[in-house]
Amino acid sequence: SKLVLTCGFRSDFKTNDLSQILEDESIEAAVKEAAEVSMGTEISDLDIINIKSLAEQVLSLTEYRIQLFDYLKNRMNAIAP
Image (cartoon, rainbow, N blue to C red; front, side, top):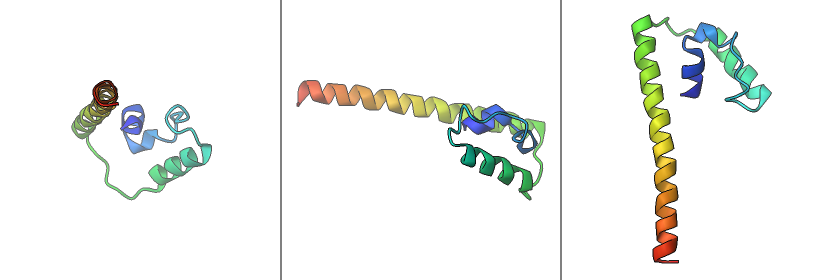
């Protein structure tokens, strides 16, 4: 999701710095190469808007899941250590 929000179209993967998202340089290089040689079809601007919206929802739900896990863990430790 973070990659989609950062780059958008696959043609933009090569020019963007992905080191903030992918810590390993070899993984970053592999992702950029895969985006470059991908044989998938191009997507429209409307499609990328929808895809980015869904990616934002995924990140939001992931953050909510982490918060909920921490809350439940703390409550369980307080109630039934």
